[in-house]
Structure formats: C-alpha cells, structure tokens
Amino acid sequence: MHELDPQRRDRWSPVLLVVLGVIAFVVVAVFATHPPDLLFGSSLGAPDDGAGKRLTALPTAFGESGEVRLQLRMPAEPFEFPLELRASRDSLRYRWLRASDSLAMTPVQAMTRGSTVTAPDRAGFYRLEVFAPDQRVIVDSLVVGVLLPFAAKHGSTVNGYRIGNYRWERAADDATPPPPGFVEVTRESAETAVSTHFRIADFITHDGQESWPRYVALDPRILDKVELVLRYLGSRDHDMTVNVNSGYRTPLHNRRVPRAASDSRHQYGDAADLAIDVDGDGRVTYLDVLAVARAVEWVERDHPGLAGGLGLYGNRGTTPYVHIDVRGTTKRWRG
Image 1 (cartoon, rainbow, N blue to C red):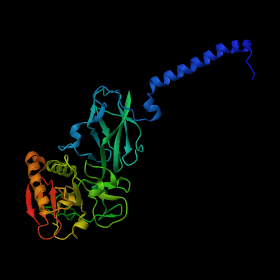
Image 2 (cartoon, rainbow, N blue to C red; image 1 turned 30 degrees about the vertical axis):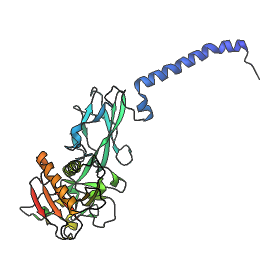
Image 3 (tube, helix red, strand yellow; image 1 turned 45 degrees about the vertical axis):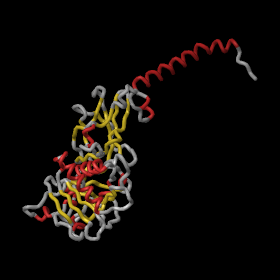
Image 4 (cartoon, rainbow, N blue to C red; image 1 turned 180 degrees about the vertical axis):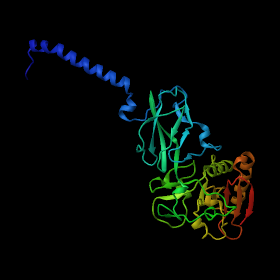
C-alpha cells in the first residue's frame, strides 16, 4: 500500500477545495434555473398543499356528467384549455404529447392570454403537457382529439377509407349538414378512453374495413348523455355490462343496415345503439330496455340541452337494445 507524502497532500488540498467549490457552484446554479423535473423528465407535481396538484382540468371540461374525457378541435385551432391553476399563470409553457404513447409531438411553447393553447396541426389524439416554474404535469384526465376536416374527404373516401356520401353533398335542400370533421383512429389509438365507460373503438363503424387509420364522426354530447343514463341506472353502485351495437355509421354502411333511416343520426356521430344489462343477471331483456328508457327521460328532464331521440328495439324476438341520440329535439319510437 502506497501512502501519499504529507507534503504533497498539503500542496493538493487548496486545489481540491477550489475544484470542489466550483463543482458545488455549478450544481446549485443549474438546479436553481432548471428544476429537477425538467432536467430528468419526471412528472413531478407541486408540493402538497392539501388541495392536490396545482394543474388539473376544470370540472366543466368533463361535461354535465363529469365523465367525458374528450374534447374535439380543428387543426391549429387556438382555444382556451380548461385548466384549473392554483398558481400564477405567468411563464406557463406547454407541448402536445401523442395520447397513445406520450411521445412529444410539438415543441414547447408559451401559453398566451391565460390558458390559450393552439391545437396540433395534424389529426389524432393528444394530451397536454404543462410546464410551470416549479412543476411539469401531463393533464392525463382529458384527451384532445384533433379532427381531420370534412374538406379532406375526396369523393367517397378519406385517405382510402370508404365513407360514402352524405345527402348534403348531393345538394339536398333539407339535408342535415355533415359533421365538421372526422376523428382519425389508428390501431394504437383505438383503445383511447373518451369517457369513463367508453373507448373510441366502441364508435368505429362495423363495416368490415380492415385498413388503418379509420375515421369516426363523434359528438362528445352523446358520451355525456349516455354516461348520465348509466349513472341514473346505478352504474356507480354496481358493475353494469354495456355493449355498443352501433356508434358511428358511415353513409355507405348506413345504406346497408336494415330499416336504418336514410338520414340516420349515426352518420353524424351523435347517436348510439346500446344493449345494457341493467339488473346484472347476465342477459339483456326488454325489462332492461324499459329501465334505460326511463333513465333517458330523467336525463332529458334534468339536462334539456341533451334532448334527442329514443328508440326501443327487441320486442319482436330480436336482441333488445336502445337507440339514444342528441339531435336537439325530442323524438320517440319503437322498432
């Protein structure tokens, strides 16, 4: 074992002290200007002040039910993100992450005029990542779906996906305007939750097309209404099996559905056909259908902005289900 000569050790001591001092100064300076969460990419929350994280989505962002997890925007649309902030809005920055894998899709940029952000310019599903002076938070309770504008539809297809044509495109005077755009669904994003009980995959047209991406028209109000119906039925008290028989239908597919209305609301993304096992006995009966119908009436009584159609099916030997939509006017029928 070799021992350092005392005289040499004395000569090195001042040098070591200077080097260690410089290193300490650099470390302190870096951490003072770059919080650890920004340096190392961890999703740190703010110090717990009894109110939880300081950056969350406002309760109003989740619809009247409090269960909706989707907002739809046009490409590059500026909008006020419903951000609840218990700290100064000064110096807030943000970027968009791809919802399916949290990959950064835009550069970090400053928020303007409070919580105003600009939607990504490409169709898809995104989550907002917010940078504040003392934290970095991914707002994972809300997903933003950027629409592919209807104008991107060429003829009867969208990027090779067969849609068909709306009556409006044939210049019918009384035709309902088409949806403003389509949600682009990839194989990876199909499982994205759009509300507490539903994924975007639940609303894809059942037309047998196997290519990706696929395109869906969807009005978040139908999610809100159905979630309220489930709550009125007691979904918070016990598990309830819900099957979406039909969500969005392309006009092409709608023409092939027996007894479907030529201007079915399914084509506009604001309708859903649901088979709900209300009593939890493992099967859907017409008694379940009647229970759902009663809940729909209660929801429309309490939330008139979600008024729409209610159709009951299955009293003629077919599997029972309920049609619910948010067309804006009350309509009732039995199939």
